[in-house]
Length: 295
View (cartoon, rainbow, N blue to C red):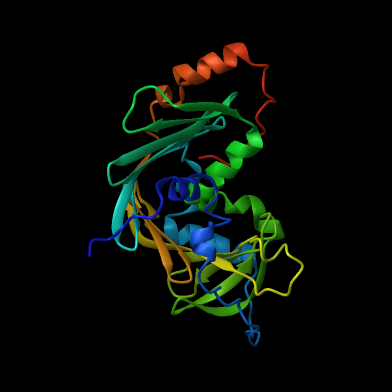
């Protein structure tokens, strides 16, 4: 029996803006277990030291600091079955553009969101149409949530901004690898990063999901989403991961980066689509976009 792709709009919404909160499909599986307390190591490195080691293993802080923009092209798969393509561009000046094209049978949907540093927006196309069937302006906070849910390279490269509030909580086994677990309290949700003791790279993040069960007042077990970073390759002498796996229970979404380019993004990529430009012309001016950690 051929693999049947889940509901198009549900998966599209999951991939676009709610990867960190999960969807009803992901939440239907058994929750992952939280990290259980372990005996403290004799010498526990602080989070800042672990982050410095990680950046040096990637190629060094000076090379990372030279990144002004990122261009990423890739594919999306569920359970090993390809369901779509991904294009992401991020640049200084709060500029971003993310395009997610999902196909289910004869139905195709493409959602694009981004910002030019002043205006945040989202448009949706159906069945390879050239005119969007939906266009809307976003608040800076809404765009920020969408970008954070997709730009894991950017989040990794800018973890230093949270270093002072990060805390090493001990050694943990993370998906079969010995790691130092570091809590990132700056995130809205409980997030733990796992630094590989051998390679010194970050193997992934475990995020506590805000599910309806947690809000029901019951003692429901916590549900966790793993963001696994794999297939590290050199790009302009910087070691970057080229595969992201989102794992919750038995459900796995795999995002493969076929191409990553540094400091090559064309500024025209951030131009407003005509439908959005028309909304700007006829709508009140949105609030200014706060500084972000892009790319």
